[in-house]
Image (cartoon, rainbow, N blue to C red):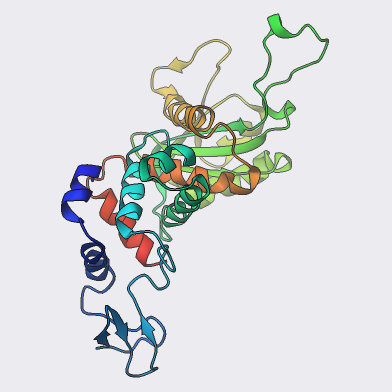
Length: 291
């Protein structure tokens, strides 16, 4: 849903509240505190006759205690789910005419609603797996290495390792991992958790920690020092996702702290996994009111 649709469908605070009520309570309102049915409408809010508490539809949701008009929340949600490479808090603040700190808080609340589904299916078919490293300054090229320093790539850096597993033409799973756990023991455990190994073929590069994967499942490798693809054996799908993620972090957010990196990973994975979902706005809204 784009901004024009939001302005047209939700022109007032009341229309936004009514939409949230239809999503959260499709069979009629109930008290979020005690679960009692048939509360009484009182001064624009609801009053529970069982526990004698008043509440609104935003109680217990990402909109709880907000002072902003709900229309701005709806606009922010639309902007974030439609921004392929994300949108920075300062840019969002200019669109919504709010302070940057307020825009950042809105973004983080929406990212809470974009966390992965609790019952995700196992990936199967052609599975690509790869690691990347996020954070820190860009590695200098040989032409720039005039200070005598050794600028290493990959595991030699102080960057944060991120593991990605993607189902070709399907969904992706990403997670932060400690450098000490970038080994066969922990990676194989991650594969068992995310992949249906009996119905899948794993494709990776020739990194040392992937070599024993053939003992777990069918495993093919591509030698990137020679070629990027060997017929259907390649890791281009996960590399494309890394490109989106890194362009978003470098071009939009510029810097992401370790504390919040997982939230940003969830955002990019959620948007990627739902890229063909025409009702993504409604799906995210449903998750937002059911937290």
